Image: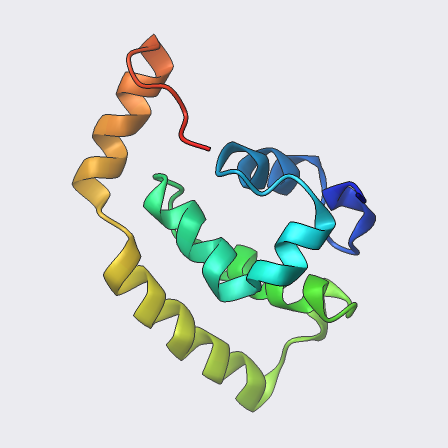
Length: 109
């Protein structure tokens, strides 16, 4: 099984975030796809960040992170907004961040 960082554009920070939500190999990430993986990140309390979202898409296509432009970028923005509106709870995320910091809640796989 390949390490997540074997995928172009996936660095140590994104690897850590993905591993925290149970995505530990490149094969798992490819199987899930960018939308499902990003949804898991948001549901775990990761703050929404459009660039992180589209970089994930570019990574799974083997493209440079900054290759997303024009109509494609607009379509991804619309998908990002839809995912964010259903998968991210700012209040829960802030509370979970505090509880995680003090060690009250275990990170979910």
